[in-house]
Structures are given as structure tokens and as C-alpha cells.
Length: 177
Image (tube, rainbow, N blue to C red; front, top):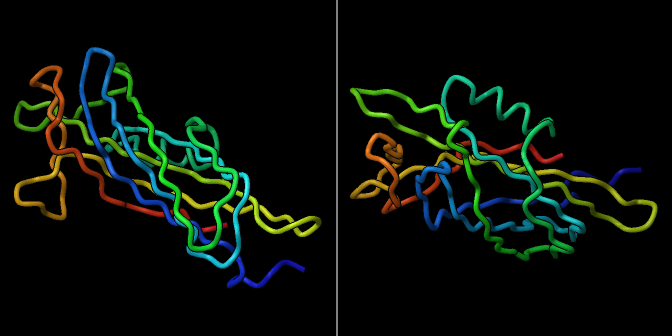
């Protein structure tokens, strides 16, 4: 019989953006993703897939395809994560120039990136080996002065640049499976 729900491992994802830049190649976001096992069971063989997409009219379709496993790429793997343990992973996500769909507001071309992460893992031992999943979406933008709940979008109409105060806010989570 499957273990009780309370015995399932629970994985939380936290995103920090360390840099964001716009170049002729597109938009690149450097990040640190922290995985935290807040459950009571160890996790094994974690694989994390990621996607960087535009906020806007195609956002829901892009996220639906990603969480269905139809898009995105594996970007991290972790052998084991014990109960209460956290693991910090760093990497970059890129949105190529041809994939950018800027929003036009008052003559300004703006980009609001959405970062999505989908983590798959195993738990249990021997014949009672189970599969689990957790994920999240984050809006990426510029921190305002003083910081507020909302982030400012990235301006694209000012040409290639390094954005000064990149940040991320969680916008949704994938229900654990």
C-alpha cells in the first residue's frame, strides 16, 4: 500500500536572481535555485527542468506545455536530499531574441520574463520506491526603490544592457504529486 500522505516528501523551491542582461543574443537570467526538503522522507535522484518564457497572451500555453513535459530542459540533478536539508543550485536561463515578445506600453518595449522549474524525484526503498514532483513559477523583473510587492519590467527599447536590481517573485506552485 502507498504510504500515508503525511509521509510523502515535500519539496519547496526558492529562486534568487543574481543578474539579468539583454544582449543581441537575447535575455539571460543568472539565478540560484534552492531546493528544500520540508518533508519527513529523503528524496533521491532529483532532476530539475527549467523554462524562461514571456509573460503575456501565450504565457498559460507555454507553462501548460512545460509542466506537461513538452518543453524546457533538464538543468540540475541532485543525488539525495535528506529531510530538512536544502541544496542551492546556480545556472543561467536564456530567452533567445527571436523568442522575445515585448509588450508595448506608451512607446516603450517591455519584457516580463517568467521562470518555471519542474522537479521530479524518487523516494522510498526497494519495492516501495515512489516518484514525486514539485514545481513553481516566478516572475522576474527589476526591484523598485523602495522595494514593493510588484517588480518593474525590463525595458528593451533602451538597447543592450545589464539590469541593475534583478529580482524574482513566486507566482505559483505545482501541487506535489
